[in-house]
Length: 98
Image (cartoon, rainbow, N blue to C red; front, side):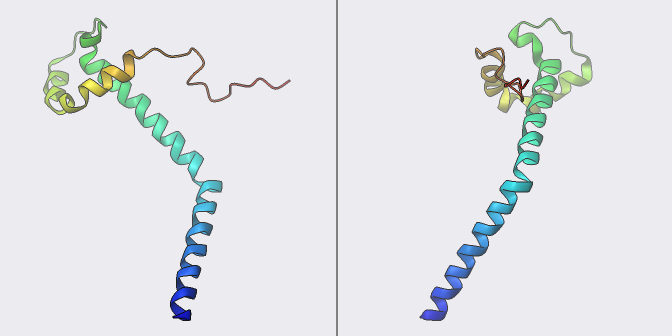
């Protein structure tokens, strides 16, 4: 009984330490990679199906072949691109230090 409790306590402490170290080292990198992927996905979708939101881009034949793969995420992409934003919402450094 005591051994089981000690094992559980040790596991919880180990998980807390791993989460703490990830937060100190890797979280910012993972967050930046997620934002970069979303920006590149928005650019790709704009180049392929930009005419759906009013951007006059004439896609080539090969881009039109990609449309069946893009259809499942099309509604979410249109909501994400067309939603109203604050001009400084996507800035990494909002504060100016002097």
